[in-house]
Amino acid sequence: MKKSSAVVLVLSGALLTGCDGDSYSGSWGSSQTYTNNHYVSGRGYYHAPYFAWYPYPYNYYDPVRRSYYHGGNYTPAAHVSSVTASKPTARWSSSTSPSSGVRRGGFSSSRSGIS
Image (cartoon, rainbow, N blue to C red; front, side, top):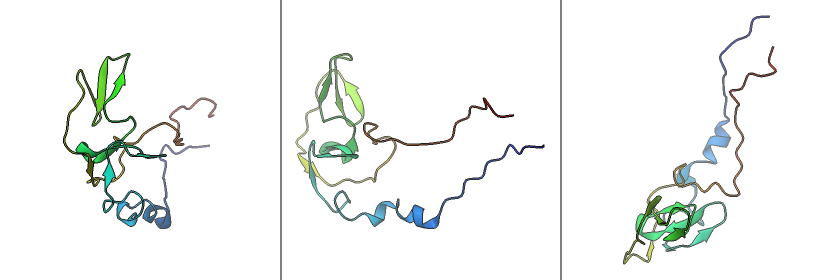
């Protein structure tokens, strides 16, 4: 039996429209203003000076790294900003996506057990 090496992934249009960033004008849309360190389950912590969501609180201190986390980076000193509230400028992205509590399935590249 000849096997094809091509894999075709078909997504429903209804499924894609549910993920459109502009369709969310509610709880975390860009029209909403959030204070620094506002937490939303499944979204993470809002860093007002960076206008985006992150997996750790603003200026979270990591004792292993001996660094402070802010805006997706670790630095030796805490970040100081006069911005205490803002509106997100970007939609949810993989770079700002918190991994805790979120499970995603996918395809495996392993071919073990395939004959």
